[in-house]
Length: 86
Image 1 (tube, helix red, strand yellow):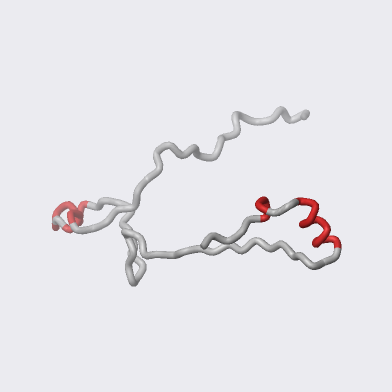
Image 2 (cartoon, rainbow, N blue to C red):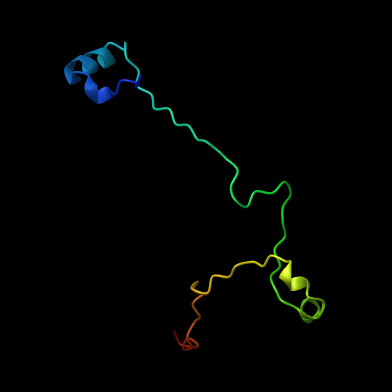
């Protein structure tokens, strides 16, 4: 059975109940949290750099690396110096 909505009732009747304080409208939100694909019991530290030692030993094949956002814009630089009399 679906819960009745406010729009399904007569507006005049609803407003009169509100004025007489017989009706109190509340909105209830709920969230459902589930385990994702990358769920782990403990925090996993991602590697940020590929080093020479990793290449020599071959351990880089088993490690997880941090993803980089190459589309991110950096801090805009200031162009030159201000005139001393300004």
